[in-house]
Length: 313
Image 1 (tube, helix red, strand yellow):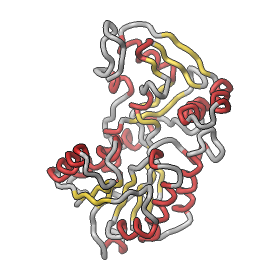
Image 2: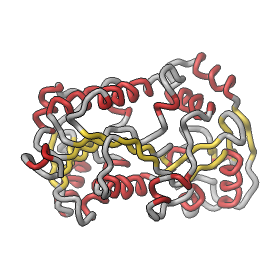
Image 3: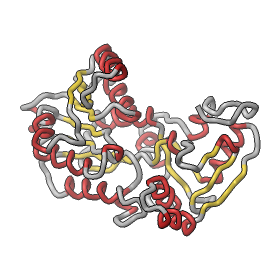
Image 4: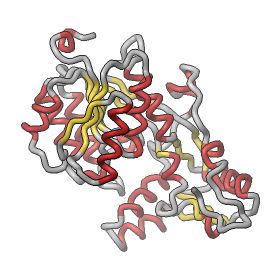
């Protein structure tokens, strides 16, 4: 424990309980060394919100409330101040500027250790001015953290969530029409990790000894080319798939035609193949002997039989 932590609560605050946050909370609440876990949620009296709070209470997880999208920095800093570690699981859906605001609040509060929402690609390698303009804010966060020494930080680079690779809205795997659309080229690779594995690995990284300080840590459930992905869909679905190639110029044209289409921006970034993959053999999970699901393992059991309508479940 650092000197800063010795004078404050030793617990961990997880911001958000969506697909990622719920898995991080679950992994931390089961980790023998994690200590008390609190989750920050938006105020809610809906049946779903009530069930979530009851489930968290059953697992011994405390709930704090604030809307990070609207709360000012001073209010967030006061809320964050008691915690020794803060893990942000609030992604881009919270709106532009939220990642910077949370980082300013963490630094103002003097939080000893921060894991920002960077559970994705290698923003340093991608650089500023990419087709996905939201990524520039991620670099702003890194600049803020690297420019100071009071708060330790850890960035967990996970690649794309495995579920997103197969999401019909992303457009790469069109299971209903037995089609795979490659981004950039058939040999372009993408690193993917399931939300469940990210939760487990984040808990392990937080508790790692020796302590991980001011580092980018790379994890990988799988690193797969679009050619290999099409083969996976054929094996799992049991029938051939149509293979279409969406080139970088074609996808950049989509962005130009509709600059407000976020999915087009994501597809254009991943098509370039820069900063979106790394060798699984070098990942934290492999070097520490922690098993993770490959894309094919995740897909098996989630594709309805080809005699049905070919949907992922």
